[in-house]
Length: 325
Picture (cartoon, rainbow, N blue to C red):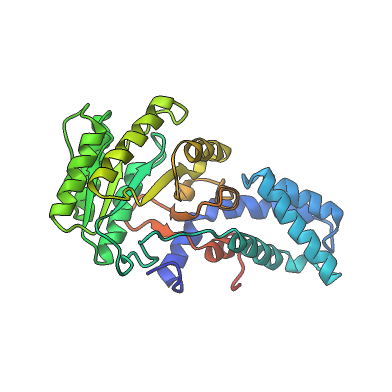
């Protein structure tokens, strides 16, 4: 089911469960922030600012949220604390919607390829080691296959045997083939073989894994450029999407990784993982707002079904406990 369709009950339950630790942390801070108050005043706004900054939303996005709340309170004259959660939910949802700059680039929200899109559609996945990159690829392959696509994976992280082995495992789970070479092989050669095979076999979507060494090393970024150039020679325009995977549990470090990768390569999608095991889920709001690059997927568990298309309104609703927006 695509992002523009209503959330199923199971998806809603998974989202709520996955954000439980973040929700507990935010609500505990909100409770302390409003203790002894009867309405939203300057002191409450100051306290809210601290709540969001310490919830890993980020300073810049926090200030935008506070400005919106302040304007809303001034416009409505009196806003009681019993309305605070609804108010936060509405204003944050609207803020994120205003920053929406999504480009499906041929792959539609329900994971079908837009009419006239040349196959294969190629996704290159980047990110540092340990963020859940290979796991995300396996889960995404599963989502794409369930939508009726023919999928192929390329193991271009040739520097770690574990990376190739892990991708093999996820390929088996999702029921999709994995193209690989021996350890230490040229990643560009793996990408070439994968796309050549995909073209020959009428594959709909190809997902290429890449090495996740230190994100601030020029050598890695040069390597990503080389892989892109090789893919473009086989499939003109490839890669069509560059998906950056970030670990949500690292909080502000995820912002820094995003800055580095966005500066070095043409990232046009983000996936934020490991939200089920952290109280730092507020980082999703900040990253979604800051980079003007759509957060496309969020990881909410270890299972193959635990990758969701990021729905801004449902995420904010879940975080602040509002029934409807």
